[in-house]
Image (cartoon, rainbow, N blue to C red):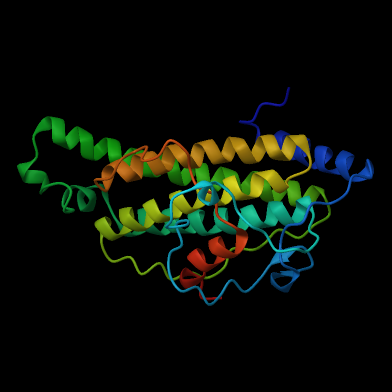
Length: 249
């Protein structure tokens, strides 16, 4: 079995699985709207009205996501996921360049370094380390998805230019919480539309990691790490509406 910590090997396994599924003649599931697709690359995610975190009303509708009635492919699914991972990767990279460990200590959730006890200082260090690891995870996701798309003859969605509007550590952590929870719901919504078994396995393995990220950031922002017995799913349009306002080009 391919080691998932070997990005190139993992990408090769995903690509082979997608090829085998396509060659098997199975019908394609309906997925992404062609109006936001060109040459296998996701484009122009604009016009969002705010952060969409799922349906407000209670009930089973929260656990499902409606997708546009158009044909898509597993390469489209990969590029859809890559669009989200590119955004998250850039977000953590820029945040860690912008804020130091001391900035984390002086944020509202903590106190000045000079006032910290040894225990609290260790907690600040731990949180900073967690954010660094989350950033490394997002970079690894980008690498695997990009490689798999390339091996399939597709064009990986490039990283866009973003404006995250973050000016403080607290704002950074709050925005990270939104991105991670949106990512969890996005993968939950996309999973039923994936055809190849290894791609589904890869998507679920990323989904569970995104959920761990979300749990940490929920806790840091003073909310429950696991608020519900079941996570909601978002359609691709709801996800694009959520992340669109952060994308400049």
